[in-house]
Each structure stands twice: as C-alpha cells, then as structure tokens.
Image (tube, rainbow, N blue to C red):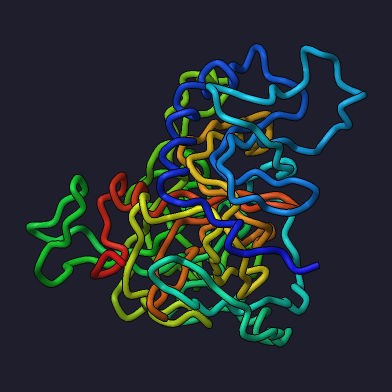
Amino acid sequence: MKLDENKMILSQQYTAEVQTAHRAAVEEFMNPQQLRPNVVGLGVGVKWRNGEPTGEPALLTLVTHKIPRDELSRADLIPSRLADMQTDVLEIGYPFAGVGELRQKPTQVRTELMQPTNGATGTYRVTERMEIPEMGVELLAKRARPAEGGYSVGHYKITAGTIATCVYDILPGGSTNPPVHGVGTPPRYYILSNNHVLANSNDAAVGDPILQPGPFDGGNASTDVIARLNRFVPIDFEPTIPREQHRNLVDAAIAEAAFHDIDREIYWLGYVRGWRRKQDVTVGMPVFKTGRTTNFTSGRITAISATVDVGYGNGKVARFKDQIITTNISAGGDSGSLVATLVNNTPAAVGLLFAGSSVATIVNQIENVRSLLRVEIAEQML
C-alpha cells in the first residue's frame, strides 16, 4: 500500500502549535524519576492511524519498543493528550552513540533517491532505486588524501567514525545569532565530526592526534595522522550530572588539518552549498547522508524538536534537546556523517548524525552545530 507522502509532512502552523505543547509538557513528562517503561524521549511529529499518516500534529512519545496496552498498568499508559495536544507513540529502539561494535566489511546498501517535486513546499518523489557497489562501501574505510566527507576517521583512542565535511571559522562580519556569513579567506580548515569520534567523549585533550582512517580501519598514529583536535562541545553525562540538568544540544567537535589533506566534497553527495535553519527543517523532509559503514543512504525526518536520552556505554547516558529523528539511515561507524536534503536540486546541510538504533537515527540540528562550534558549514542558507 502506497502511503500519502503529503500527510507525512507537518505544516509550519501545525509545527508551531505542537512545539508550544512540547515546551509545556516535556519537563514533567521526561522527569527521570517518573519515566514510563521504555520511554526515551518526546518529540514533534505527525499522528498516524492504522499504519497511515494523517498530517495532523502530535506530540510523539519516543519508546524503545511498543508494549500492548493490555500489558501496561493504568499509570504507565501514555496519555491521549499532553498540554492539550494529541499524542502518538514512535518506536526508535535503544538510542546509542558510542563507538563500540563496527562492521568489518559493510554489505551493499540499497536506497531510494528522492527528487523534489516542489522545492518550496518540500514534497518529493522517488526517482530511482540504486545499489552502492561493495567496493564503494569498503572504500570509505580506507586511507584517503585528500579525505572527503564520508570517510573513516577517529581519535587515536577510539574505533572509527565518519568525517562530516571540511569547515572553517566564521569569518569577520559573520555571526551566529542572527546567523550571518562573514567575508574573507579562511586561515584554518577543520574536519567536522562528533565529540565521541574526535574527542573521545570529553576524554581527549586539545592537540590529540586524529587518524584517517580510524584505528579500527587500520589507522596508525605513526603514519595516518590527518589532523589535531582543536575544540569540542562538552557533553553532560549521567551519572556525573543528573539527567534533568543536562543542556546537551550537539555531540560535535573539530580537528585542524592541512588544507591539502581534506576536501569539502562529500563522497557520492558532492559539494554541499548551503545549510538549513532550524525553522526550515521539517517533519517529513527527505534526507540523505554518506557514512563510513553504510555509505549513501536516504530516509525521512519523523520528528523534530525532540528531547531524547542516548546511551554512550559504560553506564553513561546523555539527554539531548532539540534533536532530529529520522528513519534508520545509519549503523555503527556512521557517527559524524553530515545529513543533507535537496533544496532546488542543491544539497543543503540539515544536521550532524551522532546516534541511532536498528530502527531510527538521531541527528543534531546543523544550526546548533554552527553556533556552538562557531564554524561555517557552507556559504549560504538555503
């Protein structure tokens, strides 16, 4: 049965209404001492009925897996309404952002290429099915100079993640609030990826060596240093910091590299020429990425403005706010991938992939990454 793609999209008016409800409900609903079974988050999305999208706004309760209503106590049932907004339940698995088990030899990736039918409204149609050859998938785990986005990378003490793209400091005259692009020639260039990829989940020191490929893929500190850690946004972790006090927006870091060793191209995607503001990242938007493990994959945004609890291994949990949830477009080792969409047939950055499960992927808003790291992602807002 073909789904009505237009009803997967949430209008700007509905988005504003449900975001207001989210702000009113999230603190109480996500109280760590009173979380319902399997609940890991709360987001903004579309109500589904009988397996079909309705186009109606809803607060989405994010759960690891759905439990039949008759197996839940009355106290554990999800309310039909929160803050006077209808609710729905979205299964996203167990969100994880560590650098644990990776695939040694990725298999073929099957994906759908999305072509916009109306760039202004964000409606898309499937134009082609394709398969990335296994050689192309394995290529991203190899050494490359210059290294493009999508290739394996990592702090010398981790396994491996993915290069998002090459970025640079916001230029003179530029700002983050409001977002304005500066003018001039960048004096330094950086690899963009996750904190847990480049900064070992807060445990690295500025100047630490970054390897390409990552250590899991054979990267060696004596021959494969491509960059040095420059800065990262610290992550609040439980148990060190109580979960209700977490203020995490991004899992992001940059490492300085020589201009000739990195490339602003992203394997298979090409050159990302713009980025999307948060207000222009919408539920139902088709997205795609290139990553070290699964290469090129595409999917769709299922929730925005999400508050979600993410595991990092060794008993550490971090609560993130203002996140994007997509269908599953990733696997272990894809952390750090740049997630993009098409705007007038031009790739535009949407977010930074940092966590996921077997059924969903979690992405930082690229506007938050730009603001907190003070780096330029691309030359224009699209």
